[in-house]
Length: 240
Length: 306
Ligand SMILES: Nc1ncnc2c1ncn2[C@@H]1O[C@H](COP(=O)(O)OP(=O)(O)O)[C@@H](O)[C@H]1O
Ligand SMILES: [Mg+2]
Image (spheres, rainbow over the protein chains, first blue to last red):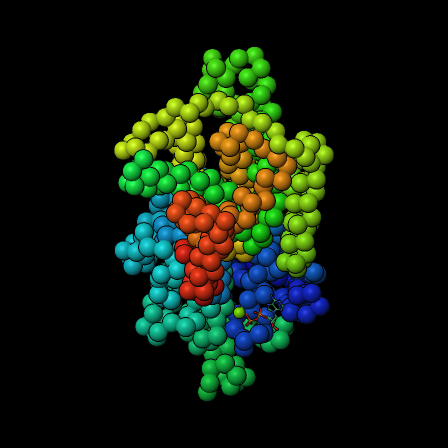
């Protein structure tokens, strides 16, 4: 049962002009797993996701997805290989309806029937989106926008789903609902999930692997269960 | 003419002028919506459309085609003017704006001004400095509604302008490309991540906006009977005001803004010293912006970036 990882980063460096944001990070996500990346604000978590997606291309290092190198590809090429992101801040199209936002998630797909099925599935996961189907994205509440962002990413039917701080700014009850759905997505569709979180406790509790990031470097990688017991993690991220 | 038919006549004239301003304003607003740049060359693209129109129309008329096949002639005149200017629009984008897409806004703005001057001079050199007459294709006949006369030319032009605006609305709301365009305007990074080809989307915007401007140029030529290399300026100012008034970036805003600007101008000139009509137009613009800086239908920054 030793499948090759679905995603692998090897010594990846990313810069914003001359700001060295990722200083050689290596990590991997096994096929079908939930893995999480935790770390303080400004550590480089979002940059890691944007680098995987090709929006902030790496200057050095390798990114292997599904057995193929994807560093150097354009975002649309990476998307079509099966990576979708629900980015930080949700990035909903404010003047497009819920339906249109979801439709945009399937922009590169041509299988009408499959798109319809996935839309039904998203409405099944988040019934409130169905109630708001014609409403403009900008008028939704924060929690609803988060659901829409995840739903939109699912509409691409990705092999790998990247989630950037899905719990940020949400009420505890909504956070719980989002995490339950993440587990459901992973279990029902087998989608591999790469979760970025500041809510380390929750994230580690649903993940199999965890990575801890500090100022552009991965400083610890371990089983999530081990990280929950790790003294350094406890002190810095679990508030114990 | 009694007062009520006089007012009716002014309404007709306002709708007519407003539709033309609206068509031109759409070009500003669409380009701004997608790349946050005021395309100062838009007025010249409008004028270029008017010139292509007069050239084609004169050609067609020289062998009597316009009389025998009026609808087909109009189709050819508008079609060629719009197609030519669409290509010109894409060329302008490619030469003047694309290389500067990641530079400062000021650089792009200067490039836009440069393009405007370049095109204006190009037209002056190739078409001359004097008025060029449009062959009169519409007579003075029209229909009489309660004393107001709507000429056949006005009816034709307003219907065509409205049809184009409806087509544009359908395009941006119903088609894949149109939705890609709206998505790009609303959140470019996200649009890229979803697989939308941003360059292609921008190119298409630079075809549609200028093509609508070209259509307006032909309409102006047909109605006023003449074109000149610098006629774009005054229309540009009004249409730009219309786009800002309606909320720059908003397509319905540009349409409403066009009608309002056209309305103010026509009614002011009808009842009050017409020398002041432009002052009034801009006073209204300033007042609206003072009360709602993002324009009538514009989204404020905070609304957009939730
Ligand atoms: N667009 C940007 N331009 C310049 N620097 C940036 C940009 N985005 C992020 N950074 C910097 O890169 C570092 C990592 O940021 P980020 O990946 O957003 O961290 P995190 O998601 O972990 O909070 C920070 O120092 C941040 O200031
Ligand atoms: Mg972040």
